[in-house]
Image 1 (cartoon, chains in turn red, orange):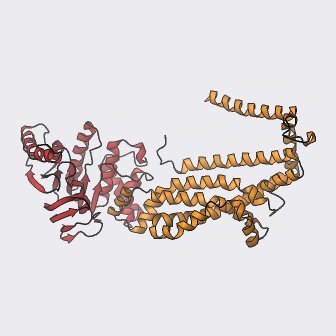
Image 2 (tube, rainbow over the protein chains, first blue to last red):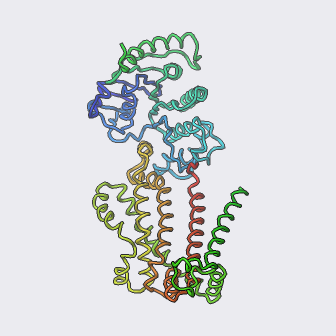
Image 3 (cartoon, chains in turn green, cyan):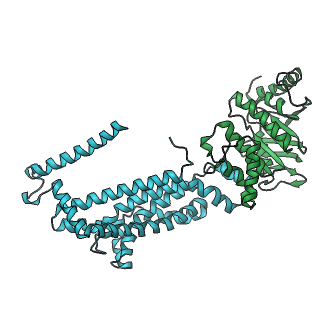
Length: 250
Length: 260
């Protein structure tokens, strides 16, 4: 479980996050929604231990997060694959770093290559892959490290709409198999309603938790079903005022 | 492709034609650029081929190529052995950079030729002395490129490696070094070229009576310009061959790169 308590993050010229408290339960899928610059990415970076909080604390399974959090898997929008490593090599990076034996590394990478549907592309280099495939590698690499928490920063933001829908389905399929908590940043209300157990709407800068929506629609969800539409309406309303604030509109 | 091949031949053919006309017409003499008609400058193509053939048959050319390559290798290996670690160190650590950089910046503009007295004083008339001169020319491109490669490492890849559990040392060996390999390799390739250009400077003070760089001033002093040309062309050709071989190796070894 990820616990965030009274978290404030100030940079030199502005406050990114102000008194944010939030919990992500074990196996829970939480989406963060908010206007640009509301500190969503900052929150993920803090959870990954890549930045340290100005005030407040973060806990993972009761342990305080200090320094880089090696129990989490990070998935970036821009994939951030190691270009000199093949698909297999990228996925094996984590296990390899942790000193896991070669045969075991290969077993792990094969498992996740199969899981994300990259069979046959093991020895391809990242530049030979499409955007969707690159992100599959990114997800497999994060999973291969057996993390307690998956942090995803707009992972499908760079993909075309069709691929994006497919990848959302794929992510849920994987998540249902390997039940790890996910904290997922997105700009898309549709995506949040389709994926999440809970959607956290954040306010315009400085980012605070404005409202939390429970999405009780059973999976597999119908994107355009009446329940989803109603949920989307509520969230859009809540988000809309913040977006107006962020862009200086009345 | 075929058309381009034709154009290559055309370029070389035209060059050789102009050269031969210039030699046969003695135009440089008639224009007053060359003072003596008997100098035979530039030499005709057949006379250069003949000179080349003579020195191949006597073994002088082969030995000269061998010695020059040995001198190049001494300098190049030394440049890589020192340039790569020093480049990584200065790229990786701000403190190391601040300590070492001023020294490097002052040393870098000093031409290899200026180091000849020091080479002779320290190493005498030895192959090492010739290698040292080449090292001076080859060292800085390796150093500077390695430094830039390390410095340009994508910070997101470093962060990614850290969240995957990498220690500082692992970040260096598993991210920074592979990331900067293309730049490093480019540096070594430049060094190969610059080092080869230093062969004349390295051999002219006579570390041995063989060497492509030694033979050029040697034949020039006895006014045998067809031999001078033969050795110059050999220098050029071997430099070209080495560069091509290196390029092949590079594009195979670094095939993970996205290329245009």
